[in-house]
Length: 61
Image 1: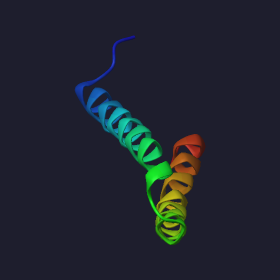
Image 2: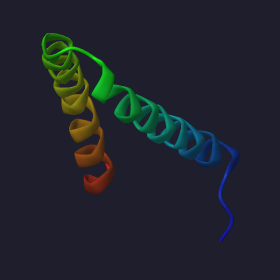
Image 3: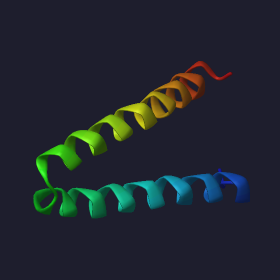
């Protein structure tokens, strides 16, 4: 079974997200504690969107 162009594009977006997370992780040791807390809050807020999308995909909706 071959992947559609749309699926490949969406999977590339996920690969971009993964690469971005690796770059962020590499930077964490050099930022201040308060900045880490703010970054964690921002990431947590974005994470709810990831969780909602994952649930939607798993339900097939």
